Structures are given as C-alpha cells and as structure tokens.
Image (cartoon, rainbow, N blue to C red; front, side):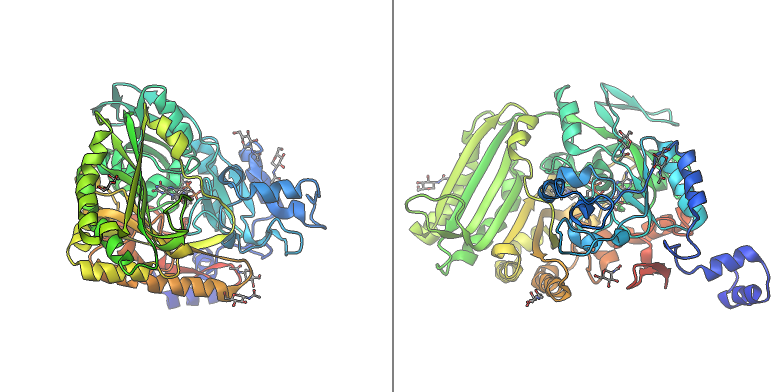
Length: 589
Ligand SMILES: Cc1cc2nc3c(=O)[nH]c(=O)nc-3n(C[C@H](O)[C@H](O)[C@H](O)COP(=O)(O)OP(=O)(O)OC[C@H]3O[C@@H](n4cnc5c(N)ncnc54)[C@H](O)[C@@H]3O)c2cc1C
Ligand SMILES: *[C@@H]1O[C@H](CO)[C@@H](O)[C@H](O)[C@H]1NC(C)=O
Ligand SMILES: *[C@@H]1O[C@H](CO)[C@@H](O)[C@H](O)[C@H]1NC(C)=O
Ligand SMILES: *[C@@H]1O[C@H](CO)[C@@H](O)[C@H](O)[C@H]1NC(C)=O
Ligand SMILES: *[C@@H]1O[C@H](CO)[C@@H](O)[C@H](O)[C@H]1NC(C)=O
Ligand SMILES: *[C@@H]1O[C@H](CO)[C@@H](O)[C@H](O)[C@H]1NC(C)=O
C-alpha cells in the first residue's frame, strides 16, 4: 500500500484516478450528495433484479399528513401492530426498537416523519443471486450496505440510514434431510438428521417443519426470531444445556461473501468463513442464504414453573436470591434448563390469600426432558426446600406447578416469548461461570443486588442456557467463533431498561445506569464476557467482552474477506476503521 500522503500527492497532481477515488471518498455514498448513484443507476439495478428493488415508505408514514401514504384509516391499525414482532419482521425496513431508526417516523401524528432514519433502497431477496447482486452494487458504488432479516436486534445492527439493505426475509425454503447429509465439495457424509433452511427462516416455521418428523432444533424462545442473526451470534436455547448452542449444531452454510461469491462453507470448504460465521456476529463476513442444522428427537417435556419468594420488606430477600442462584449449577446438572426472573421487589404475578401483593425472590419457567415421572422435579427441588425451611423457617413460600407435554412444539406453543415489540430499550448482560455462582456468596450477593437497582421493576433475568452441553460442545471442524466465555458459563444474566423517544437525557441516563449496575457482575467474572445478541451495545472493551481470545482470528478473517469494509456495523468485528457521524454518515476515522 502507498502511504496516504503519497496518495494525496498523486491525487492533487492529477495522477492515478482510482487511487484518488479511494482516497477522497472517506465516507460511504449518502443520499442527496454527489457520490450517490443516479436514479438511472438505481433503475438499472432494479432491472438486474427483475424488479425486486424496493424503495419502501417508512411504515409510520400513514399517520402523517403530507406523506404520500397518509391514511387516517390505516394509522390506528399500524400503531397497534407496531407492538407485535410479526409486523416489523414482515416489513422490508422496520425494526423492533424505535431508537434504531432515530424516531424518524413513529406511527404518531404529532411527531416528525421522514425516511431519513431508514435504508434508502431494499433488495427483496429470495435467492442467493439476488443477495449477490445487492452486495456487488454496494461494493461498486461505495454505498453503505445493511442486512435486515426480522429486525429483532437489540443492538441496532439491522438498520442503517441511507443504505442499500438486503432483506433476507423471503429466503424461506425448508428441507428436512433424514438419516444422513453429504457435505458439498467434500467426500464427507454426516450421520444423523438435519434440516436445511433459508437464511430468512423464523424459529416457529423451523419448529413446525421439524416437528412433522418428530424432531426439534436448538432454537430460541421467540417465534419470529430469524435464523440469520441468531446463528451468527451463537444462539442460546432451552436445549443448549444438552446439545450446545445453535452455532454448535451447524453442519453447513451457503454464504454470499463481501466480494460477491456464493460459496458453501463447511468443515472442509472455506473453513475460516465457516468458523467465523458461527458466533462472529451478523452482517460482518457475508450473508447466510441457507444453513443446515443438526436436528434432535423432539423430547417429552415436563414443564416446571416455580415461585420461591418472600415479602420484599424482609431483610432476607437478597440472601434467598443469592442462595437459589448458587444452586443453579447443581440444578442444571440434574437436567433443568430454562428461564428465571429474579426480583428484589415486584407485584406478585398471582393473587391468593397469604401471598403478599409484592414479592422478592426467584420465579422460573424451566423444563426437564424425557423424564419418567413428574416426581423427578420434586426430587430435584426437595434439598432446596429443606434448606429454605431450615434457614428461614416460614418466611419463604415455595410453589411449583408441573405440566406434561408430549413434544417440544406442544410446550413451545404455550410458552413462547410473548413480550412486545415497539418502544426503545437497552440491555446489559453477563455470562456467569461456576466460580461466580458458587465461589464467593458475599460478593455474588452484592453484585446481584447492584444488578437489580434500575432495570425495569428491580428485576434481572437469569437464563439457564449454558452448562454441560455448551461447555462440552463439539462444533464441526473442531471449533467456532462463539465467545469462549460460553464454554465455562451456566447462566446468561441480563436486564433491560426502556426509555421514551426524543429525549437524549433519558437515553443517556439509561445507558449510564445499566453500565453501572452491571459493573459488579463484570468485576465478579473478570475472565468471562457477554452474549453479543443480547448485550449492552456500549460495552467499553467490546472486542474482548463479546469474543475474548477469538477476536484476533476473527479480525484477520474480516480483513481478508472484506478488505474494503463492504459490510459494516456496530458493535461488530473489524469495524474500528469507520464511525457514524452525527449527521448519520458512515465515514473513515
Ligand atoms: C423476542 C425475542 C426473543 C429472543 N430470543 C432469543 C433466544 O431465545 N436466544 C437467543 O440466542 N437470542 C434471542 N433473541 C436475540 C436474537 O438472537 C437477536 O435479536 C438476533 O439478532 C435476531 O436475529 P434476526 O435475524 O432475527 O434479526 P435482525 O435484527 O434482522 O438481524 C440481526 C443481525 O444479524 C444480521 N443478519 C440477519 N440475517 C442475516 C443473514 N442471513 N446473514 C448474515 N447476517 C444476517 C443483521 O444484519 C444484524 O446484524 C431474542 C430476541 C427477541 C427480540
Ligand atoms: C422496480 O421495478 C418494479 C417492476 O418494474 C417496480 O414495480 C418497482 O417500483 C421498481 N423499484 C424501484 C425502487 O423503482
Ligand atoms: C418480496 O418478494 C416476495 C416473493 O419472494 C413477494 O411475495 C413480496 O410481495 C415482495 N415484497 C414486496 C414488499 O414487494
Ligand atoms: C416445601 O416444603 C414445605 C414444608 O415441608 C411444603 O409444604 C411445600 O409443599 C414444599 N414445596 C415444594 C415446592 O416442594
Ligand atoms: C427527559 O428525561 C429526563 C430523565 O428521565 C426527565 O427528567 C425529563 O423530564 C424528560 N424530558 C422531557 C421533555 O420529557
Ligand atoms: C437523529 O435525529 C436527530 C433529530 O431528531 C438529528 O439531529 C440527528 O442528527 C439524527 N442522528 C443521526 C445519526 O442521523
């Protein structure tokens, strides 16, 4: 490479023009500037795509007089649907959290509305070839590239203003492969059942397809979470404690690279890319157009719902919470996996005589797989109940509710994540290892206490999605890019805090508050990290926190496969050379 001052000199003296272009274009092309491709150029792209180029209006525009799509009858409907994941997943540009389109067109009449916060154009891709055409265009014309699947992302990685967006939603093919699967471009045949799904497939569609064959995948808790962002981040699951993370169950991927090549990556072909795409993060190394996942027999499920709580006014609340959390490695070793909520003080979800209006303690929705009898749950919990009686006699109440389901899908249909989309929030999270959970109860207690100060309702989620399966996973090819912190973790602990639109102070308060309240948990787990897909976007040492010792190799692969940063997002591997300026432009630092 030429030194930059030499490049500049060549430009000024009218020298080599290609060099000048790269030197002078220190920002990605932006709509309304001279670097932006002409209408004619966009029309030609549309033709190459057989008319699949979209220029979608902001979905909230129906609520705004003066906008071409203004429609008073549509507005209340859209405002209502805004709270559902399905709405945003089905729209080419909308994402779940308002903050990430900079509130540029909320479905509320007396707010501003412009397309400024959204991608400028969208490739409605249904084949790898469509994806390739979009990537090639973005590379050639220096246009910022965006990849949107469902828009679930909690870190805002699926929306970029003024970009060309690849919308992967319609890459939806699903094929079940019984018995064995032959890797492409390799002599290898993998034994067992698998399923090959388009990069835009959503969890529920895959669950239903696999269930027809009595199978299940390592998948997430939300119905509409998309496979593209989920797998590239790692993908935690109620099955992970048994079978490893979703990324540990990938056999093969079809990927369109930043250079526009459509490649099959597996343990024998494009190994670096195969390694990086399983945990290295979305929209960084390429676009997944299809992925083959190992499936597992759908288990019978014993649903184990429990509430272990005291009155928040009791001084024992934090001791109780700390004790139960310290029992998690043991509970998981006995087969329990699932989702807990711990609280220092929240309204009781059930109103019964003898139960206080507000409670402090530990609530969970967990499962046991393929157990002979519900008694197994009682056996697992009896020692905990005994200890509680012994230590705190009658100050603590402990209820369990057991329900049997014939299949994974049967359980999921009743227990999927039914939270709402819309509004804005940030998350903060940490992966907790055995040492943190059992090594020093005093430190654990104070860290947990700090972590439950500002998060919505003084609560924290404690997901039992690590453990044996994740710690001992054997990903194809020997390893993958999943954060090594997962390999010692039992628990993914997280909390969130929402904030209203157009109030920078409120947003900054939330950022500062979340960062501070998880610091003691970070200090408790200095060798651990956090799960990229459900994380604080502003982690100070984010490369280390999200990828640990894998970062160096990921960065090398990023530089090799995408030397000119066709793909860029934050916080994403190799993004250090660019920044988003206050005016929304993406520019070299
Ligand atoms: C209700 C809800 C439930 C959740 N449950 C779980 C859970 O149980 N387990 C879990 O691990 N996570 C869970 N998550 C987090 C989830 O993993 C992330 O939100 C993830 O980013 C979603 O991916 P997506 O493709 O649906 O979303 P998007 O927001 O569309 O994409 C996320 C990221 O992936 C990139 N991307 C999308 N598709 C592709 C592709 N085909 N190729 C390359 N890059 C791509 C995008 O550019 C972006 O960077 C949940 C989130 C929500 C909102
Ligand atoms: C692309 O072409 C199709 C079909 O000709 C047309 O309907 C669509 O509006 C065009 N897209 C853009 C962005 O102009
Ligand atoms: C995108 O393409 C699919 C076909 O793959 C089509 O059904 C759908 O209507 C298109 N979406 C838009 C918004 O044009
Ligand atoms: C815990 O023990 C108490 C007292 O022995 C008993 O009444 C209660 O049912 C037990 N709870 C559970 C969930 O086993
Ligand atoms: C913005 O948020 C801050 C902090 O939450 C609050 O004190 C203030 O009243 C809000 N301002 C407006 C205009 O709502
Ligand atoms: C977000 O919108 C505000 C106006 O509400 C604007 O000042 C700011 O520049 C925008 N930010 C980006 C990154 O575009």
